[in-house]
Image (cartoon, rainbow, N blue to C red; front, side):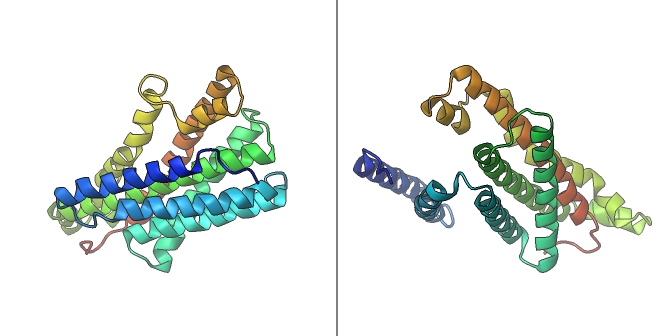
Amino acid sequence: MDIPANLTGTLVGVAVLAASTTLVLTLFRVPKMWEPAAAIARGALQLAVISVILTGIVTHPAWIVLALVVMFIVASSVATGRVGWSWHDFAMMSSSIAAGVILALIVVFATGALELTSRYALAIGAIVIGNAMSIATLTGRMFTQSVRDHWDEVEGWLALGARPRRSTIDLARRAVRDAMIPSIDQTKTTGLVVLPGAFVGAIFGGISPLEAGRFQIVVLATIMAAGSLTSVLVATWMGNVRTRPV
């Protein structure tokens, strides 16, 4: 296994960045100011472990599938935890994320946008699962907060005899739109404001900028497709509200 040439510098740099993050949040008295630093430490550990694992499995399709399944389960669990853990919520998040990811990957590989290889399946699968998780989390939290803030309006609809889903449909649509904004902004500013990690990594890996750009636009479109379906399904699941969310 190859050891990074400047491992010491990397560790020092990351440690200083994590400390700076914590200091800024502490000075502003932000609640749970340690969470970003803890997330960085956890991410570093997980990346170290997965890097070692992937070195041995990247050419074996069965192991790639297993790795993606593990990523999916973790993503679903994290998204569920953000809206309040229950098996019902886990079913909601896992099915919504799965639907979005499966749709997007089928389109990508069936149309030939990307060749169906172990490396491409792992790369784009992991990226899409991660982004679908974030969009699902945002949708769930924004919808819950919106219903809580506009409960008088929702209760008014219910009092008039409207079905629960009808009473929250406008709030659900707004939650989907708001949850998609980060992905939309990243996509429309790619190349002008943002150079995505997949694009830069592909170039560093020796791929031509043109080929890297082709891969990146496929990734961005895949994230949009998976995220939109995931978000709509989450909002639909959560729309059957009869009491004010706690």
